[in-house]
Length: 153
Image (cartoon, rainbow, N blue to C red; front, top):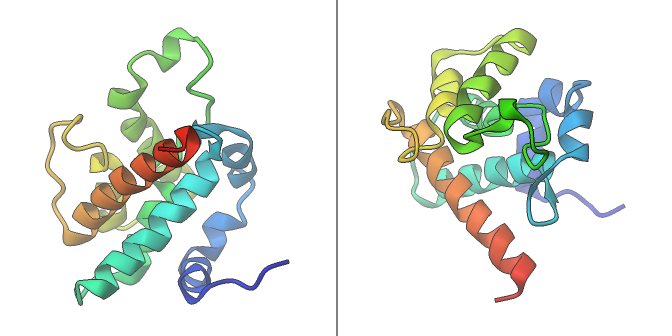
């Protein structure tokens, strides 16, 4: 087993209750982009969010940043399966993720905003907090990286 990076250790420290929760096993079995699971994607977004905030020397609520990133795609279904409930996934999954996260975890306002607004500009509401903006950007970067790596451009 490989040794965790410092960033991965920080993510696990602040998000231990999330990464060890039973529904994370659901995220691990569903694919998000290309061949990356929903869990791997969210974990990568959390790590990149920490990196961005550190590189830009931003004073952030690290706990909220990481927890919001880990839960931003906590929709708990396979969106690739044709189902009328999965229609318009890109527009709807943030609200579904927030509802699931509020059911399973105690969230602060920053964490809620991260989850609800990470799909900007597809969802029109602007992120309210710098942590939300960071996760929104990290999500787009990770998605692009996952897709480009998959198609080997």
